[in-house]
Length: 208
Image 1 (cartoon, rainbow, N blue to C red):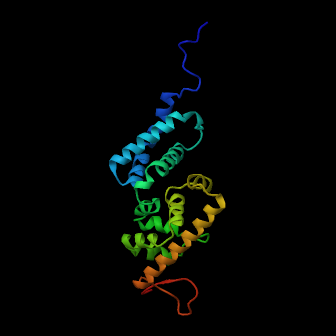
Image 2 (image 1 turned 135 degrees about the vertical axis):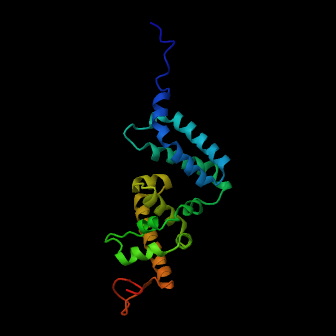
């Protein structure tokens, strides 16, 4: 019996591919725009990403995160093709840190933020948050973004950035600590919070 009309065994399943990537398209498009800063380049990057994803769909594990898989393909494609024509990824991603809640998450420590610090962050303007983020070394800023805003796990960030997991953890800790210090300085300079008289202990809200 002839198999002449049968598709090759490694041919991607178009229907399954569409079902897998469709829920992620708008998120991936948004990230493409942030990376390229140009809607035309963003669409080109998105199309290239989809083509590469389709051709490599046989490597996708059905129980894995499709969004993370697509972003990894897009990030690698951008690094190889588009990054030379654009600003660094750190400069692009820091524009997403314009909500104090994101910064509060990035500043989170193992013991959690104290209530006075949380209230202080609420009073800090978005542009001040952005300035603080720009003062953090680029690799640390990108790591904080991927972990605390995008929600990637250490291993995923390591794969995206091409670094060991230990390096990711170290950069994340330094980035969070430095951001917290900078935002506390802003709050103190504006009189939102004050240091205790002895220079030790928790910060206090001014007027309390």
